[in-house]
Length: 112
Image (cartoon, rainbow, N blue to C red; front, side, top):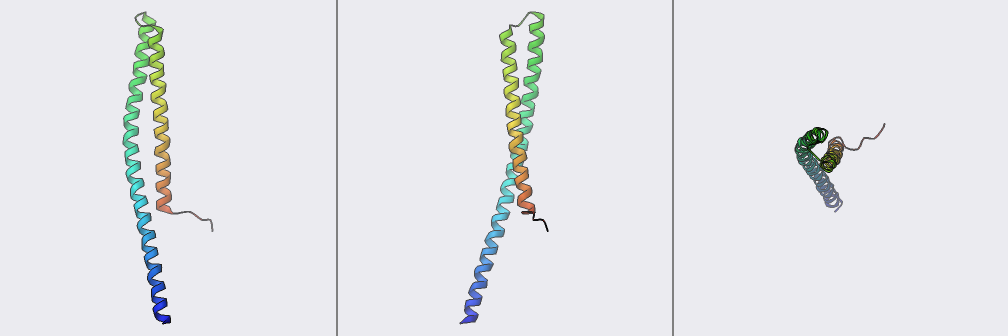
């Protein structure tokens, strides 16, 4: 009787451990995928930001030459600032995902 109860308890502990390991592996995989997706999105957003900044430079040059209105400058500035804000938000999400991935891989560090 005690042997069967001990075996059942060991089986339950083993199943619980397996589930914990599977959950941890799933979290690592999910965060790897997320980090890669955010890296790719950040590259695209960086390209969009560079294009918006270049557009702003061109518009400012046109304004100085008298061929563009100040409204065009403000519109280009707004687009550049919006693009930069989007890139920063995406970069923040990317850093948070990498941080979570490191936590998943390393576990919770406990000082000795």
